[in-house]
Amino acid sequence: MDYNIIVHQILMLFLIIFVGYVLRKRKILNSELSEGLSKLLVEVTMPALIISSMTVTLDETLITNIKIISLITAFIYIFLVIFSNTLIRFVSLSFDKKRVFIFALVFGNVGFMGYPVLDAIYPELGIFYGIFNNIAFNILVWTYGIYLFTARKNEKEKIQWKKLINNGIIAIIIGFILLFSGYRFPVPLSGAIEYLGEMTFPLSMLIIGSSLATVSFKQTIADLNVILLTITKLLIIPFICFAILNQFPIPEIVKNVTVILTAMPSAANTVVFAERFEGDQEFASQGVFITTLFSLLTIPIFVSLLNFFG
Image (cartoon, rainbow, N blue to C red; front, side, top):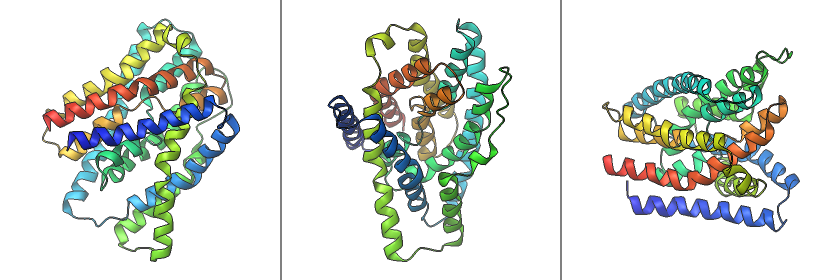
């Protein structure tokens, strides 16, 4: 990896986040517009990005790496569930805040923020490998994520299997068909899909910047539980992942993509689920805000580590 180029690319993304922040403060972006852009991102541009990123030619190396990253991702999510449930026993929080705390530790912003960062570092295959993490994310968030907010609260809400069928999953299925069949869409269609996919990066950064403008920094930084969440999510967990993976002869791109995605801030779904299932929405917003804000510093740290030990 060329470290200087990578840092410049990441800084470009973070500058767009700042633009989103300013636009929200100046009320050029409001909650309704941000919500509309989020829907556009989730329903259109991100699925287009997934499809365009999976139109690669498979070879033996890619197939091997797919198997490795899928296996590693499964183990990481199992570890995160066990680790977060163990850690929460030593933290004094209400039931609602505990659910948010666990959710925020397990689920990272691997789509909105992960894809643009991966594309900045590995423009050829970064998103392609990141998709396999996102598959596990989607399955787990709509099963274990639902369970987290509904268990022991006597709610009728069950695991929402239907939610597993969304535009992102449909795009992944289409992508796999293209990947393994070798079929390619006609140029006008493939070009349109590619252009739509490229809109994901600036849109996602603007949306993140807009969301940061809605939370009080002073109030958030004063909550020690939010600080614990931030340190654990942005430093401890990705460092554990980095230290363990560095002990094995894993292909460099697989190791780096895995560590980078583990270093992502808490998922925006944390706030969405807290609101939907009557969790502590304020605590969720604070957690997503502060982890996203400080990830602007911690992500380059882990990129540096990967570059130094690569």
